[in-house]
Length: 133
View 1 (cartoon, rainbow, N blue to C red):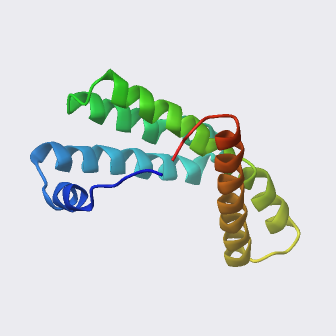
View 2 (view 1 turned 45 degrees about the horizontal axis):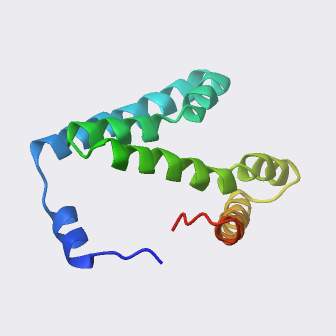
């Protein structure tokens, strides 16, 4: 089981620097730009979103904070395993919407599906000796 130092986490979340503000601004800017592209071209915005922009930004920020190659490598590897259970959502959600499901119910069902698939993946990976959480 993953141990979390809640005191250190709380301290980190409540302490902000100019670097943190820069990260927030640039990360938000990427999201806003992609949503602006979507208004004009939904295929191009889908391509941009399919790129691991948030992971790339996170790894850049981690490197800027001198977190070290091992932590960045752990982040990249963990991201790979955590992305896998989300992939079916991108097929099931459009299928549901095109069959008349409301957006809210479709999104809720897909969140549940993703959570179930996440825990199935964790269980299967543990059986083969990998501990992702």
